Every structure is written in structure tokens, then in C-alpha cells.
Image (cartoon, rainbow, N blue to C red; front, side, top):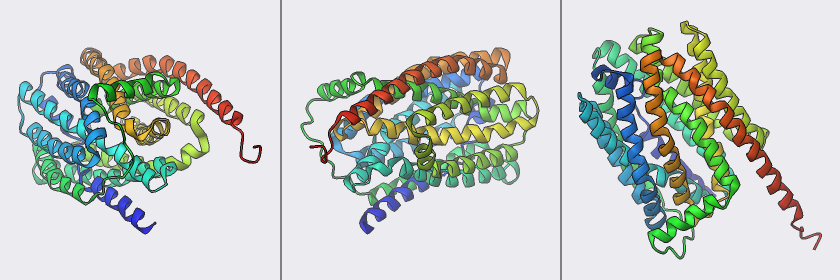
Amino acid sequence: MAAGRERIRKYFLFRAVTSFSLWLPFWTIWANNHLESLFLLTVVDAAFWTTMIVLQVPTGLLGDKYGRKPVLFLGEVMVAAGVLSFGLSTEFWQFLGSNILWAAGICFVVSGDTPFLYDTLLELGRAKEFIGVQARAWAVSAIVNAIACITGGVLVEWVIPDRLDLTLIISALVALVGSFTILLLQEPKVQRTNFGSYRIQLRDGWNAVRNSRAILTIIAFQIVVEIGLYVMAVFRSVYMNTDLDLTYFYVGTFIGAFTIAGGLVATQAGKIEGYMREKKSLWFLLLSLIGSFAVVFLVKSAEAIVVQFLIYGVSYLVGPITNGYINKRVDSQHRSTVVSIATFLFTAVLAPVEMAFGFLATEWGTRESLLILALCIAPIGIFLLSIWGTEIDKERAQVKKIPTLKQL
């Protein structure tokens, strides 16, 4: 038991030292200052997600075949290189290339991170604790990120005014050093037998998704909510700096505060999900997101910033909750592959959607584009949750049909 706790602590340490993101409040402002419009910013970001489309599934296959630690280490090093390159960029094509490298690293990180934690807990006989443990890891990252955001705000406001590029360059160097903490982690010893060709592994992983209506539905819901959250994330700093006329210090400080609040909420993800369970928890996420977007549109003064606390709370809950629902329905041999397929589907939808709303934001404004996005998300999310509720009822009915030992 003590050894198990030590392994989880080392994972938390890894998450902490790779989460120092001074750039978080400023990367969109940095790029937007050198690009002609928000639309071009979303094109640059779409290159990131297009790279994810191409590489996410292959990296997931590598994670399932060679283990979680190798792909995590390679991914973190590539992320550091991408962030550094982004901070040195001043032209459209430079930003584009940097984002491609950054995305390639993220593909490896995504393919190794969640499966590493779940398989570790599975090996320790604690798989049921996944939502709570992942949420606490997110909370650790949130605290470190909050400190980084506030530090970044002070840095570019007073210490080295307007040098937004330094927030990326310094973060990249910290992340590169931090990536070596992965060497402290222990590869989980979970049975992953009969790994055939990559084609067979991909086929089996896709069949696990396609043949389970519950998995397919939760992945689709995850896509819908995370698209809303991500578009808001891309627009957030520009919206705060331009629409709400906040200085760099306040942008960094507020985003730091949002991150702390999100981290605190994340620590309670297990309890929140345990109270609401698999039906109500997803309704809470959807309605909170839609309501928040409505407030952004309706409240035109700086007070609208308050709703970002709720949006951040949702962003820190959606991952642990939906990933928990997916992972418990997938075997370890295909866990990275299924996670990669889910990310692939998300990126395939996000890239065109983000560019479309980048165009709308350029033409009509960020607030108006976010309202339109909420109006698009609402009916799709409600439809998916109606299917999800039916699937949960079916699963519960099947469990009741299984005879207990006492009945036998």
C-alpha cells in the first residue's frame, strides 16, 4: 500500500513540474499581435489539431505496444521544443510550424498519460479511484499553472514589459528539465497480450468504440463539450484584453485565479460524480457551459469575467469524469488506442469548427461568436444525453440480471 502511494506521488510530481505554463494567458495575444486577424490565429491553431488528427492514433498504438513511459518522455520533450519555437516565432508560417511540432508532442503525451495512470491504479487494485486520483493530479497542475500565470502577468507587465515571448521561452526550458521526472515513474505491469499488427490493434480498438453505443455516445458528448471549452480558451485572453480592456497583469492574475478555482473543483470531481452519478453529472457539465456562454454575451461589462470561474470548473471536471466512464468500459490492451481514437475524432471536428468561429469572431466579435456556438452545442448535447441515459438504464438492467453468489 505504501509503495502504491509513493508511485502516485511520483506521478503527481511529474504532473507538477511539467505544468509550469507562464505562456497560458499570453500565447494567443502573442500570436494575435503578429497576425492580421483572429481568423489567422485559428488557422494556426487548426494546424495544431490537424497534426493531432494525423498522429493521435499512431501514437496511441505505440503507447499500447511499447508502454506508457517512453511515449510520455518523448512527448514532453517535443512539447518543450514546440513551445520554445512558438515563443521565437513572429510570422504566420513560423507559428504554423511551431504548432505542428507542439501538437506532435501532445499526441504522445495524451497517448501515455491517462492510460499510464489508469493502468497503474489497475495494477494496485484501485481502478475505481481513477476519477478522484486524476482529478487530484489535475488540481496539482492547476496550482502550479496558477502560480505560473500570475508570475507571467507580473513579468510582462512590470519586470520586462510587453515581452510576451519570454513567457513561452522560459516555460519551454522548465518543461524540458521537468520531463526527466518521467524517469522516476514505474511502468505499470498490466497484461497487454496478443498485440498483433498495428492494423489489427487499430481495428480492435475501433471495434471497441463502434460496438459500444455507450462508449460512442460519451466520446461524442466529450467532443461537443470540449469544443465549446476550447474555443473559449482560444478567445479568452484576447477577449479579456480587448473586449474587457484588462491589462496583462490582470489577464495573468485572473487566469491564475480561474485555474486555482478549477483545481479546487477538480479535487472534488470524485465526490461530485459520486453524488450526481453517470446521468446527472453530464447534464451539469452541459448546462453550465451553455449558461456561461449566454452570460458572456449578455453582460458587456468587466463583471462578465466572473463566469469564467464556472467555465474553468467545467473544464477541470469534464476530463476526469468522461475519461473515467470511457476507461471502465475498455480493456487495458486497447486503452491507449481508444483514447487516441477519441482524441482523433475530437480534433477532426474541432479544426473546421474553430476556424469557422474564428471567421465569425473576426466579422462579428468574440462575444457574438460564442453565443452562436452555445446555440449550436445545446441541441446536440441534449440529444446525446438522451441516448446516454437510455444506455445507462440498459447497463443497470443487465447487471440486475446477473445472479449473485447467494442466489446461486
